Image 1: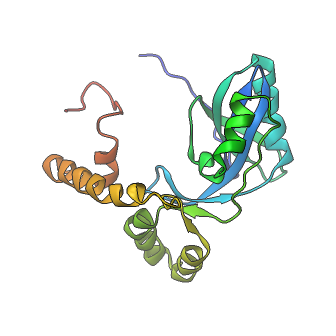
Image 2: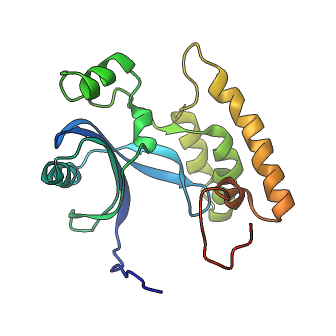
Length: 204
C-alpha cells in the first residue's frame, strides 16, 4: 500500500469557503471552528478576515480557472503566513455566513459582483454544542467561555419562516443514536458510518 506523507504544520487552523467562475471569486468566507464534535467536524463557527488566506484561494482558483464551489482547510502560522492543508470541492460551513439568497444567486449564477458574507455573528448548532461543546468545556475548565459563546451565537438552522431544519435535527439524532447503540460506537462515528472507509478490516 502506498502512502502520502504531509509535513506537520503548527498554528491556527482556519477554513475557507468560496465559489468561483472561470477562476474569479464570486463568493468568499473565511472562518474558524471554535468548538468541534470531538476531533472532527466544527459545530461553532466564527468569521475572520485574513488577506493572505484570500490571496492563496484567489491564486489557486485563478491558476486552475476554477468554476464551482471550492473550500480549504488552512493553517495560519505564527508569522502570519497561511499554508493549505486540504482542499474540498464542495460546500462547507462557511456557506452559513450567507443569508441573502438573491444576492448570492446573482453573484454565482449571474453577472452580479462578488458577494461578501452578510452574517457577522458566530453561527452554531446548539444541540451539537450541548452534546459535544459542554462536556469539552467541563473537562477543560472552560465553562465561562462556553456560556459566552452560546450567548453570542446564532442558531444556523433557524431560518425565518422555515422551522423544518430545527425540527429535523431531532429525528436525525434519534437515527444516529440507534446506529451507535446497535454498532456499539460513539455518536460521531455513527454519524459518518455510511460515508467513510477506515480500511479493509472495518466491519459494516
